[in-house]
Length: 235
Image (tube, rainbow, N blue to C red; front, side, top):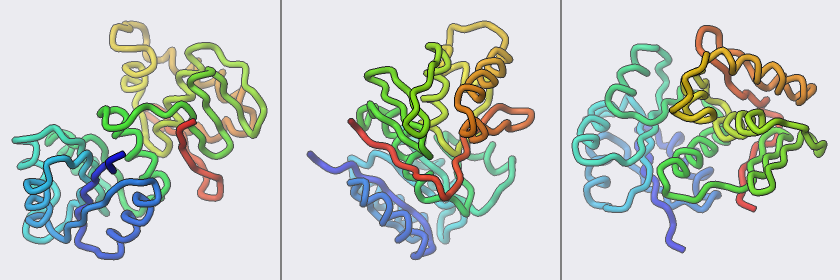
């Protein structure tokens, strides 16, 4: 099977190597660029790039400039990597068509998980039947969830909610975004219904329920400690 190509553009060679090592372990083919102009050259030369990881602060052309030019000709998923951590930068990126935004420093395993989720969402790879993070296991085909080997008695929406959290581990999710993906776009109820489901889900997950963090004024995030195992696989 042909490898999925991912372009990583970052002027720091150590950062490129870190990202490349983790992505190649997952079977991806990684192309590297040390500046914005090189990133664009590779993008125009290679016709089958499935995902682009862009650093913001790069010489010659910064990440936002590269993103703006690529968006004029392509809808390829773009994930921004940046040391900046400001709402203004994030909003700027999303307005340009960025799909995800991760601030440095970040967990390489979380990055790999985000890459997998974006590629599944874009249709570049099939949706994994089994997801696993920090002792939480989701089997989509059997519709079974467990924590540390113990099955969870979940309702349909609780299962979908937990699966969405695991598939987006480490990412802050707004209530509106959760509604769109778990309750679907045609749901017109109160977004606070999510709070009730999260409360019930936390209780059923026992100690691991603490992994679901509240992002005040926004929504929720599944945050797994670095010491916990983090892996996603197809069954």
